[in-house]
Image (cartoon, rainbow, N blue to C red):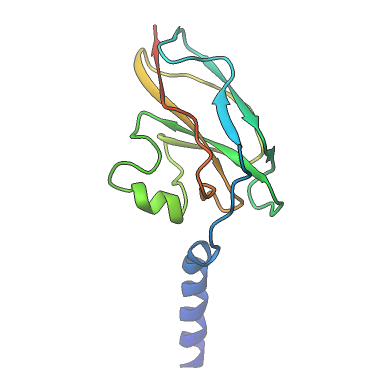
Length: 147
């Protein structure tokens, strides 16, 4: 019975840790932006996206250091905090899938093979646990067309 209790407690803590982490404050005036793309830009694939950041530093995921975070790229989805999982992503963290690219190694650019057509992009800074800062440090959503 003690073994089952210990296993249950371990499982609970592994799921609860992000919930218990609390809000990571964003430095006042921090901004994230696209360096080489603007809303309405037409590009060809592969697309290189360069991330810009002002007012805070970049640190790999898992690094607990004040005024730092790491980049996330949201692709073809509602703006941060909107949509069916909007509230959850602001408090629990961003998922990792085709619409949510994580750059937990501290990367500041990426080259992607995007299909021809229209795509929306948004940059978001995440804390050591992939949770957006409070308030969120996020770019405007831009739309690009891939030829």
